[in-house]
Picture 1 (cartoon, helix red, strand yellow):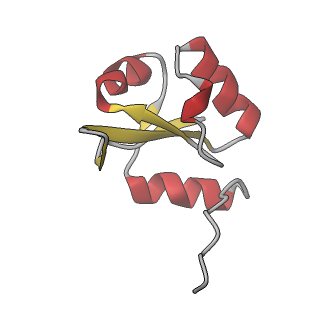
Picture 2: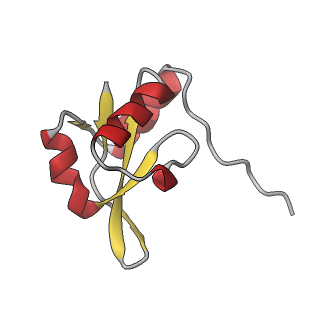
Picture 3: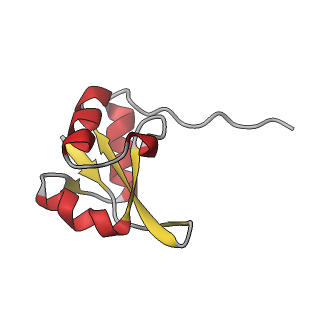
Length: 88
């Protein structure tokens, strides 16, 4: 299933959502490509998508969930790939 959280992350003067699959990275890539999400938006286990794309992606079949639900679904599927912690 393709999941999307609400646009809540501020960066580059806009808000961003996260688009991910709870099934496979391939499913996420296929959905993103089919709906015009640029490959450069891929960030380890999800796509960053601007708020103006949110409604169209939901209309295309992405299921709206909270940010916590999206991360929990990635973890449950074994697909979560957090950024490594920097050591000082």
